[in-house]
Amino acid sequence: KISVPFWSFTIIGIGALSCGFAGMLSHKWGARRLATIALVASGICCVASPLFLQQSSVGLLLVFLLFWGAVVIADSPMFSTLIASAAPAEIRGSSLTIVNCIGFSLTIVSMQCLELFSSVITMPYLFLLLAPGPVLGVLALRR
Image (cartoon, rainbow, N blue to C red; front, side, top):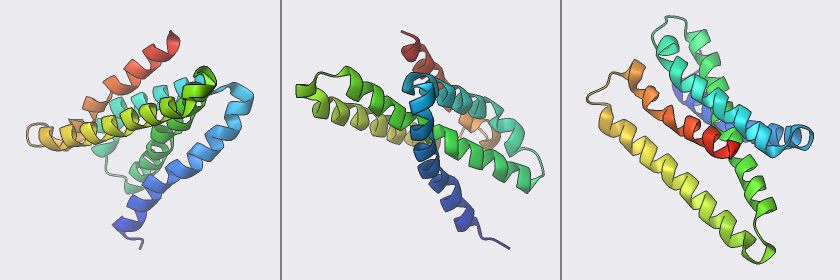
């Protein structure tokens, strides 16, 4: 029997692998396209989360969480690539710093909001609150 901490670290850690895999795929598909795919997949996971959190198969839940753990982070290096290629050389480092700070800040605020709303929204529906993030990201990428 594998412990819960093992699965927690595995679900979180799979993001590292997905970042590397996304980086390799970006050479073929392009960073913008890959970021869009990752955002759409992450948004679908947000919307589908009540279905997976309420079913009885632990195995199916773990597969879902591993997939979500992979796609939720795969867009981050794509955004860094897009910023690095679009920013003028003299402000590239500052641009990347600002974008990464915004990204981490949004993550922290999102997690704090989930904690705040967890007292009024039951767990299966809590992650629906995250769905606007990927939608807004996809809309921003389309510009």
